[in-house]
Length: 169
Image 1 (tube, rainbow, N blue to C red):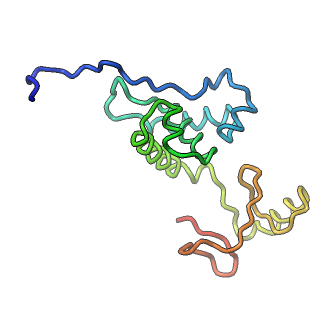
Image 2: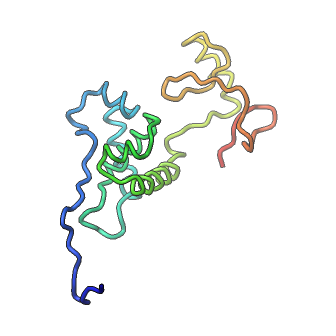
Image 3: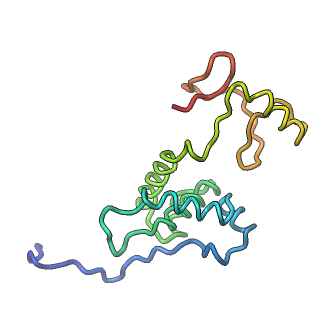
């Protein structure tokens, strides 16, 4: 059945995309447990990624950038399924999959300004500093304070000759 040309589709029940939390009222410790970042970092990340996450067409049911960022951070921090995180943030799984792709692309775009890869000449100093902190030898960096033992590099990873440093193009 065709609609008349001048007919505008009206939403019966507009979807409501709500932030998983109110960043201003949630305890700092809970934010770190849930998202692996503190309040200031999450707000800075939302501000930095907002231009990349805004829809080209201002749709009344569009998902706010903060909801997108919080949903993806929750997904990455929890290791949960897309369906579970999507339901918690009021989205369908396919919609969350699209949001995940857009937020990860935006994060990659800004990666160089937020992630520092150590230079070869800095490695001895880094190893010494980390050894002084925790008496664990041969540590050159930390992510989220989690110790991850690297046994062998994944297949297809480019490596520098003799340094064991992963190259990110």
